[in-house]
Length: 124
Picture 1 (spheres, one colour):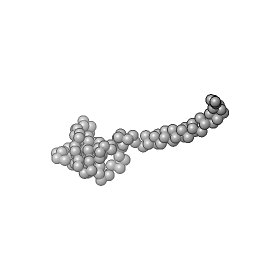
Picture 2 (tube, one colour):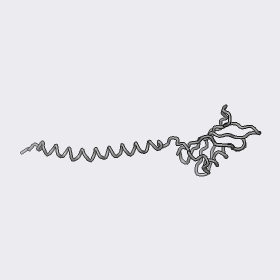
Picture 3 (spheres, rainbow, N blue to C red):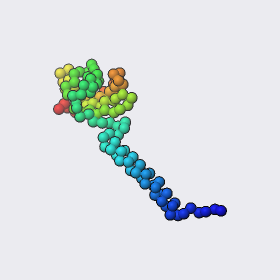
Picture 4 (cartoon, rainbow, N blue to C red):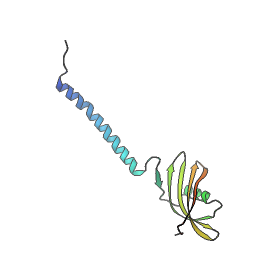
């Protein structure tokens, strides 16, 4: 006839299923924490090497007819169907130094100027 499962076996079964699940969840949490310490996917990441060739090429593209890049003060990048660069730099225009904020979307060599803003800051 009908037999009820042995409570002892049921507890062992739950423990056997619970342990791998806990390990998996713990592993996934640790991996996600490690990834967020580097950079959030789709978020902005600071560029430490301000002499990077791609960064300089995008800054020069952004300055275009405005003037000559003197110094890149700070920059960051974002992965978006290519790279989007956020650049603050000193630009010489008509013998005067001005600070500009540029954003350039670089889609594998096809560049689009997204932001061109003259800042009130002085060059440093």
